[in-house]
Image (cartoon, rainbow, N blue to C red; front, top):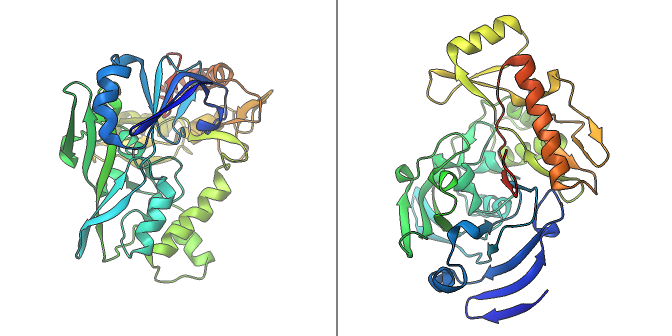
Length: 349
């Protein structure tokens, strides 16, 4: 592996990516560029990275599966500054893309800022949060995003997009739909100093009661979420995984009613638009008998059917093959397609 240091970035050739993805699968980047100053991006894309199609922007590696080596240049943004740019009852906080997401959530709570507590312990970085529109326990990050700062590869300029220009949807955004155009460099969040708890998601109130908490503070809601996640989801540092591998299918009310009539135990959740229903991908997969399934070092977590795991030596292609067969079994039994949440590098779904 060769390396070089320049103003605002470091370059390494034939760089291993095993430790840069939470599945822990082997992959190589022909060129890895660690960007310490995003002001270097115009130079990088003007010379070193002339082809946007051959570039992968890598955050915490928690939302991708390497089914092969990276196709070209891999960019890793390293800047990790957090600051309040407007303060008051509603504060605007700016965080660089390289900030670790869970550390950012804890920072907001330490500064008496609320809104992100239900999103505690989600792996990844701040820069990845708007791309995936991360969500958990009844909250999506788009609800707290004020604006997204990014480098637009098409124009060669930095842009600042207000939240309503980011085309957020369930686990989706403008940035995810056009991954070869934008490099998210920072995110601005609108957070409140008056706590309004979101406790409607199953399990949170029960966990708070188990903690002996009646009227919770934001930090206590975050602690409840952390406890639930640690019980349900394997720690990527111990058992390689990318969290939930499949999106929950969203169907019309008519289709949901037909499925529920045929499968009375099927959980249903009202969709965000009020006219659709969200189904539990975990329940569908569990009904097909995959929870705890293992083939060599590739498997499905024993405690959560939605989580594919690497027991140590699984390859990306092995995990992808397992995921495809899981999706095929759900389609055969329920007539529903499953879509992966992680980005798949080196193969098509």
